[in-house]
Amino acid sequence: MSLASRLPDRPGTEAVAVKGWLGAHRWLLLRRASQLFFLALFLAGPLFGVWITKGTLASSLTLGILPLSDPFIQLQSLVAGHLPILTAVTGAFLVLAGYLLVGGRVYCSWVCPINPVTDAAFWLHRRLGFGKGWQPRRGTRIWLLVLALLGSAVTGTVFWEFVNPVTLFHRALVYGLVGGWFVVLAIFLFDLFVSRRGWCSHLCPVGAFYGQLNRFALLKISAKARAACDNCMDCFAVCPEPHVITPALRGTEPDGSPVIRHFDCTNCARCIDVCAKDVFAFALRSDRSEVSARPHLAPES
Image (cartoon, rainbow, N blue to C red; front, side):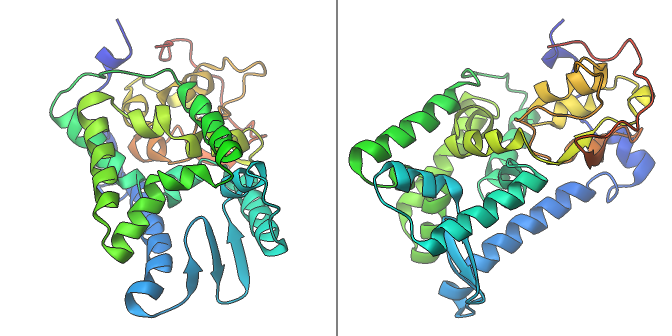
């Protein structure tokens, strides 16, 4: 029996009964607030004349003091043959330092404005009872990352920015450009009808880039109470990258660590929300505070 066939239809039901609705959606609500906060920072100036932050997620200046630059953008600029200015280097270094602390793919789940779009597509996909659909190999996004860098090198431009859904979405909101809305709609329909979790989990090169930073991040999610797991599978049902959970729950890391170390983990904390047994919690990557794992935990998919 496959993993997908054993996933619950309405994950988190038991957690709602135990914690209450707010308790079972706490981290999800915080993520949505975080995504809206970052979006508001960049839109407040052009839409309402309140210039707290000037720029976009690609490059910005906050309060006229704090420069921040997307390191992926700066990498493309570098391979395109453009030497970055000191402000851009400083901004990229600050962003890198931040994501090395909290995890690179925190960008995907806590900052990226496309995440609510793909989450909505996933929710509707499950409600309509669709199958997984076409599932590209997970390495596909690495190849797209390489192609984006090659495109920059060949064209001498920041190549990905021409098609980056985040940038196009921002332009659609600020300038009303219809093309940006079509790209967002295309991603929604792709995840809904073609490939479950297809864009973020399999194709997005930005996620691939930040996933590499995840290899060194200090903040992780730990299955520190994995002995309490009752194998309900709710965490697998809601996780955007469910393959990252099994080693932590089964203790199959070389040192038996309960920490989810896989670089695909987005630290979205939905596993924390939906677990009625409070198996998961945020922890440092060196966490060892768990009780021994039970032998009957969820098998590999």
